[in-house]
Image 1 (tube, rainbow, N blue to C red):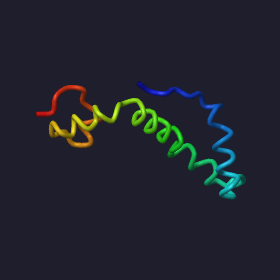
Image 2 (tube, rainbow, N blue to C red):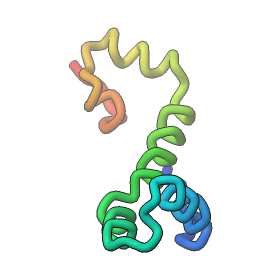
Image 3 (tube, rainbow, N blue to C red):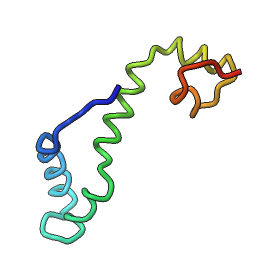
Image 4 (tube, rainbow, N blue to C red):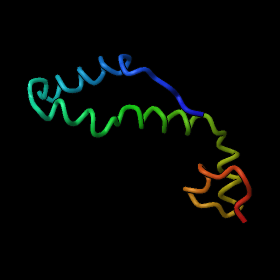
Length: 78
């Protein structure tokens, strides 16, 4: 599952981050948020890690799955 957040909801945290970095009136302040929306990626990662029980991840690793396959393939790993 994915978490879908509207763009205006992320506007305040991005503004605060740019303010703290001193990048409000610069070209980098316009370019960087568009190139790498790291906050959205971080939220998706946290939701993914919290939604799958630890026992399920552990059993997949015991079956021989690598880290990439643990999160990408729902079937067996033999």
